[in-house]
Image (cartoon, rainbow, N blue to C red; front, side):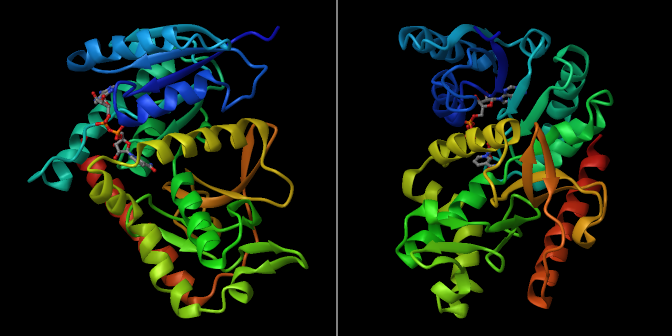
Amino acid sequence: AKDPVRILVTGAAGQIGYALVPMIARGTILGPDQPVILHLLDIPPAAESLNGVKMELVDAAFPLLKGVVATTNVVEACKDVNIAIMVGGFPRKEGMERKDVMSKNVSIYKEQASALDQYAAANVKILVVANPANTNALILKEFAPSIPEKNITCLTRLDHNRALGQVSERAGVPVSHVKNVIIWGNHSSTQYPDVNHAVIITSEGAKPVRTVIDDNAWLDGDFITTVQQRGAAIIKARKLSSALSAASSACDHIRDWVLGTPKDVWVSMGVYSDGSYGVPPGLIYSYPVTCAGGQWMIVQGLSIDEFSRAKLDATAAELAEEKAMAYLCL
Ligand code: NAI
C-alpha cells in the first residue's frame, strides 16, 4: 500500500473548507489508491467549529482517510505536509478599505510562509485560494525562501471552469467538449477570460469556439463580464460565496498539477511570471499551462491580438499595483 500523502487545508472551518475536505478524503485529488492524512488549520475563534468538521470526517468513515490533524497551531499544521491548500484568510468586511484587507492578509501569509518553509515536506506544492489570491501567493513566495517558486501557485481554475461552463451553455454542448479557454492575470474582475484559442469538440472534429458560436459581440462582451463577475452573482443568489465550485476547482488544480493534464489540453493556473507574453516578471499571474511529471509549463507561442494585449496588460498593471501595496503593508 502507498504511504499516505499529507494535505493541509487552512481556513478549514470555513465555507470552502467544509466543501473541500470531503472531496479530498474521497480521493478526488489523487485517486482511489492514494491514502491521505488531512491537516486542518483555523484560528482559535473557529476551533470548536473545526473540531466539529473533524468529528464529521471521522463519522463519514472515508476508507482513504488515515488521519486528521485539526489544530490552531500553524507549525503543527504545516509539519511534513506534501500539499498545502491555503483557503484561510481575512475577509473584506463592509466599509473596509482594500489596503486594510491587504494588510491583514499580508501578515497571515507571511507567518504561514515561514512555517511552511521550515516544517513542510521537501517539494511541498502550494495552492493559494484566499483572496487576494495572486498577491497572497506572492507574499508566501517571498517569505518561504527554501520553497522553489515553481511550487507556489494560486487558484484561477474556478474562473477557467466558469468560462468552460459559459461556452458550453451557449453552444449547447457538454462541458467536457469545450477545451483550452484561458484565464489571464489576476483572480479579480480585471482577469481576462480568452476564447481565441479555445475549441469545441464536434462530430466533425475540434472547431474554434468562434466558428461554433458565431457571435463575436457576445464572446467579446457579456461572456467576459459574466465570467469576471460570476463570484459576485453567486454571492447575490446564495447569500454565501461560491464554496462548492471553488472547492471542486481547487481539486482540479492540484490533480492536474500532480498527475498531469490530458493530451492537447491546457488549464489556467496562477504562477510566478517569467516574462512570458510580455507580462512583467515577478508577479503571480494566471497563464495557460500544461502539467507533466508534477511540473507546470506555460503554453508558449499563442498569438495575442490587440484586444487581448490591452486586457493582458491591464490585469498585469493591477497585479503590480497590488504587489506595491502589499510591500507597503510589510
Ligand atoms: P470563510 O470566511 O467561510 O472561511 C475562511 C476561514 O478562514 C474561516 O474559517 C476563518 O476562521 C479562517 N481563517 C482566518 N484567518 C485565518 C488564519 N490566519 N489561518 C487559518 N485560517 C484562518 O470564507 P470562504 O468562503 O471559505 O472563502 C475563503 C477564501 O477564499 C476567501 O478569501 C475568498 O475570498 C476566497 N475565494 C477564492 C476563490 C478563488 O477562485 N481563488 C473563489 C472563492 C473564494
